[in-house]
Image (cartoon, rainbow, N blue to C red; front, side, top):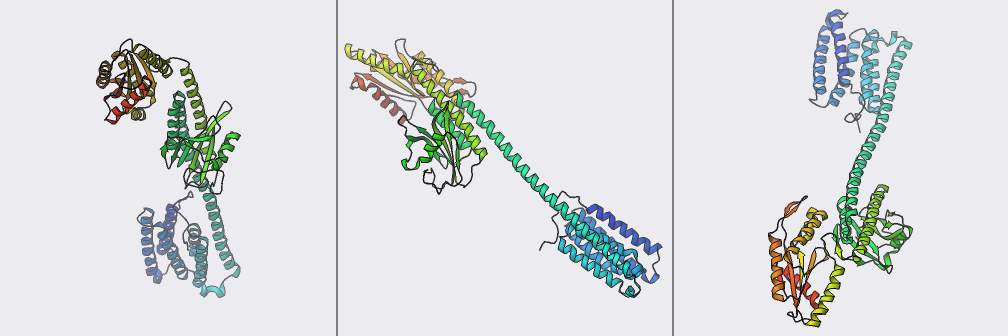
Length: 519
């Protein structure tokens, strides 16, 4: 059973020093009575003993105030000491007329302040009983009204102190709980603010990405590393209206390979996309209209990807805890979803724009659409006039790692500088194109295999020796893998020249990279 009230975590005033001062005043009164009062010579030894023990008691209490040992024990010893000392002094002074009974007020007030109510009540009963014992010899001559008033005031004083102390402590507990709530909300607000700043920064990055694949990778990074979801996914709707996972992560293990959604568990996905509003499910275990990514999932959140009134898919977040997602989580993911939808729309618009032009704006080379057109033309010319035709495919080694380490902006600068190096290594008649991502192709009209391999080796060496200067990353060095094929040396039809060049490139990569492979 709890004896003391909690004194370790309190806003109420600490009475340790005040109580010590009152004890010093009580000792002063005892000393004055001993040496200048009406004490008889036969009682002097007793009062000397009382003064000595009182001094020891004060020394012990002072050490407790200084933190030498538990102050609670000092208070308990003081209360017990008073219950022995006060009746002893009353009996050896004036009995019923002794003023030392006033010290009970000090004892009872301290008991009411530091002890729990029932223990303080017990000590008050003991104090009343000890006072009756001390004045027992004078009970026949005592004024009953005067005695009743003394006990009444003692108990009224005790009840008043107990009530005030309990009221203050209840108010204190409410205030401390409010402080705890405020601290928790402040911590959550600071965390939300930090997350928002990171999300907005990543949203700015998303807006600058013009490739849907990179947008998907960046969004998966945000959901995993910043928002910290257990499992999550991006769901798209294809032209036929079917839904598929464009990317997904189970326990933060990411897969970027598209996968068709389970037809039996996509009712909820369809409903959210039709409504165009985010939905949180506190416990998904009882639902049959959704197939979880992770068998340990207990709660989910689905937020649609909508832009200009069109919903292209949704973002899914799953948690292994039930009732995990709240309004703040919904707001965070909604910010990400809006930025993602805009980024994907921008990427699609950029792709369509690129299809209408022949130049790749980033590398100042011809684009893929132009490459396909020119390759068909050169193949027909080579076949018609029995001319050689060669194709070089160039791929940057470890480009994904470079992008992950330094960011897409640095990757773009690397692509620009690489294209400049390749342009210096080829001839004016050669057709230099960006095949896609970090891959480039060079069409070499009327060029036999020997000459094409020489040009490819020159490209490889120049790239290996070059030092790329990038503001955000400093001085970088890269290597490339190159595949070369020629018609008619490769013995293949001119229609297969692109596939053979691609095969040669993959052999170069498989052979250790920074190689030229010829087929």
